[in-house]
Each structure stands twice: as structure tokens, then as C-alpha cells.
Length: 306
Image (cartoon, rainbow, N blue to C red; front, side, top):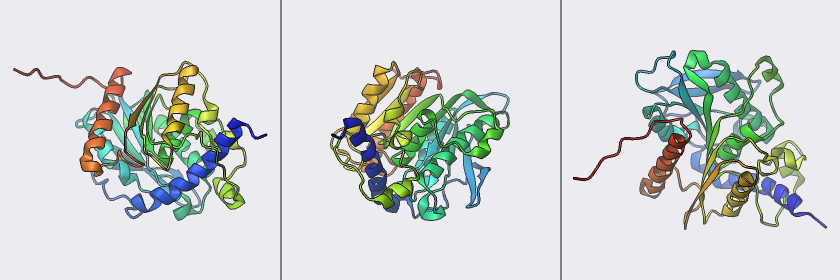
């Protein structure tokens, strides 16, 4: 008899593949990113495939001696494609709020012929690089937020929860990849649906048959960073039930995890330019409130009606 845990973890493979078909065309055409003219570009990792870059948006008047919290965004695209431009407007907003906002590139199969586990390694490397270069960037190492959407949400969660897939070259640094908070947009985490991948080619694309090692849900433990999740209840790509299961498990282990479900909204609802920007504004506002609540941002001024 197949256990529920096995069904859930194998279904994560299905989700990662399905996300790729939903997301690849949506963000894949705008690469290299074009909305980064206001950012400072850094190379954080050199691989045999490419030089991987970060684009850093600094708060106005930022002085590196005044350490600031940072937020690093990972784009979606099913680990096949996508562009850092996806979160450019998010980055600009949070830099204006006083954070150092960073767009991260990472390798994907459509451009670099890599496995998903290599993408995860890149995400981990990017946070280690930010920590290692905190003095140069003016970043508070204890206040780094990992964020992302869809596969990028899975990647952000992976930097905090997964114990495997660190790049061996990263042994040169003393820093780990663990962020201090997570802000996730319809992330791939797990699923309660009784479906799994039977196609060995798809499993090969992931790069491992160790189901548990790539599942944030199955790596939940205590003392994880505070987390907020935004998810469309009508999401057909990553079921809302997966976010709910993850949230409940986080709370069972004593972690702070907030889930906002958006009725009748589907995958990618939160992106800038979608639905007259209503969900974009609402999710950014709630993310802002969350970061205020954990001490990463100062409260916005409140006006009183006369």
C-alpha cells in the first residue's frame, strides 16, 4: 500500500513539471532582464554554464555602514525559464521602504541544460554570497528575506528548509543559505492530491530520486524562519491545499506561518500588471505589514480622516 507521504512527495515532482508549462511562456521572453537599469549588478557565482548575477536596488541615500535588511527575489518559470524582471516592481517598492532589494538569476534547464537540484544550489549560493558580502552591500546578515513565486517560491523555501544540494564550491564560505524570513507567492511545496510522476525522464530532469530531499513540506522542523504565503484558491497549477498543508505543519512545529488565500484567483495572480494590479498591491501591502511585525521594516505613517 502506498503511503500518503509517498503520494504527496511524488506529486511534488508532478507540480514542478506542470509549473514549467504554465510559467515558461509567461516570463521567459524578457531575458536577460530589462528592468534593472536602476540596480547595481554583481556576479555572485561563476559556473561552466554562465556567470550568475544579482541586481541590487539600494534605498535612497543608502550608506553601507548603516546596515539594512535585505530581500532577495527568485523568479518563477518551472525551473525551465523565467526572468528576474518578474519581481522588479516588488524590488523597487521594498527598496523605497528602506530594504536592500535583490533580484537573483539562477540556472534553468531551458537556458543552461541543468537539473532542478542545480537551480536549488544556485539559490543557496546567492544567499551565502549576500551574507559573505554584507559589509560591501551594507546588509544586516540577520535580516535577510528570501522570496519568490511558483518555482521561485519553492527555491526560496528550499534555501531555508532543504539540507541537501549546497554547491561543493560553497565550502569556501563560513555562511549558510538560511534566510531570516520567507515571503512566498503560490510556491511549490507539496500536494495532497493522489497523483505522481511515472515518467522517468521527468524524474531525471529533477536530478534525484530522493523524494523527500526536494520537498519543503517533508523537511519542516522547529525553529524555521517566520513565513507568509499568498496563494490563489483557484490555482490549478499548485493546489491551494498544498499551501494549507504546509502552513498547518509549520504551526505544528511551533513556527510562525501565515497563509492568505485569494478566492477565484489562479496561478500567478500576484504579478505586477495582472488583474488591474489589485492583487499585486494587496499582497505587497500584506508582505509589508508582515515585515513590520517581525521588525524588518518601520511602520508606514497612518493618516486620520478629518
